Image (cartoon, rainbow, N blue to C red):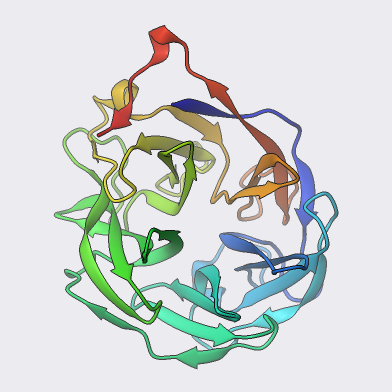
Length: 296
């Protein structure tokens, strides 16, 4: 197991100027043989008001080392649009977003999206709510989405072989007992999973939207991408392998290095007011005394 650490200074990655007043939960994808593309929550209002977040601002750039250029807005259909996730398969890009009922759109060139029917079976009420994230694991796709289970925060797990038809298979991460945060909508936000040397690392912001917890990202580790355990607060030291000061972070890889992003509402103390920032993320080898925290 390795311990993730933010090892560099935050620098500006993108700040909307024409199509929004800030950038919140976002996704970043690298185009095959091309540059990087960002899609994220924004609003025409300066103040934090989730109900006015009704489209995504779109930006792109050739490298993670340069400030991205604002390109426009997408998914502007008059409904709330939160926390996009984009993956590519066979030359087609799939976007998943919330809140509430999971929505999907598709495109071949990233700037113009078409809504498409998505089929989800077996998910309990409130289990799949928002903040979707999708990765490939073997022959299947795994989708992580935040919600609530039995009155506690959770991250649901869904599986698919074609990115259109999904089945709920359980929970990747649950909480219970003396879990310190438990707002009605769920404290787990913006899950992001990567695989490194045969282990899976789940990054998730853990917040009740208070300024004190807004930048609190917990990291869990597991041998199985489908199961990271149950967080009860009193098992914090055994389960959480790292706490990072970031909100809704994406973990990215370029030129042999990992990076993490952060973002958020105006007035919440993000590194660049109104903008998404990026910093290098390193993984430190664990000493013998530190071993533990891997969910088997």
